[in-house]
Length: 105
Image 1 (cartoon, rainbow, N blue to C red):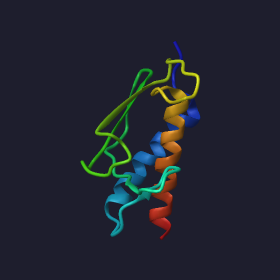
Image 2: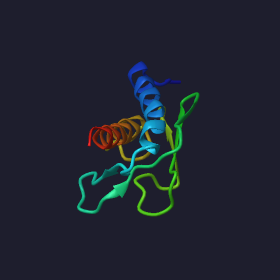
Image 3: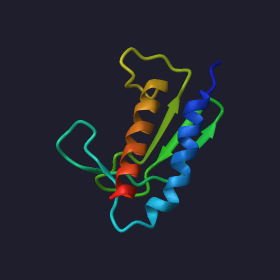
Image 4: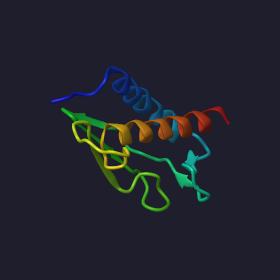
C-alpha cells in the first residue's frame, strides 16, 4: 500500500493555508484548465485519510471541483484521469496556480 509523497503533502498543507487568504480576497480565483470557459476555484480544506485525499467544492455553480472528489493514490491509471495519484497532482497544481495568481493580482 502506497502512501502520499512528502511533496504532495506539502502542496496540500500549502493549499490549506492559502484557503483562508483566498476567501478574504475581493476577486475569486479562476482557472481555464486548458479550456476556454473559466471555472471558479473555491474549495474547502483538503482532507487526507490514509491513501485517500478528498477535495470538496465550496460553491455549486461553475466550480473546478465537482462537489466532492476523492482520490486514491493506490489506484493505477494509464492516462492519470481516474482519480489516481497523477490526477491528484494535476488538480493540486491547478488549484495552487489559481490561488497564487489571485493573491498576486
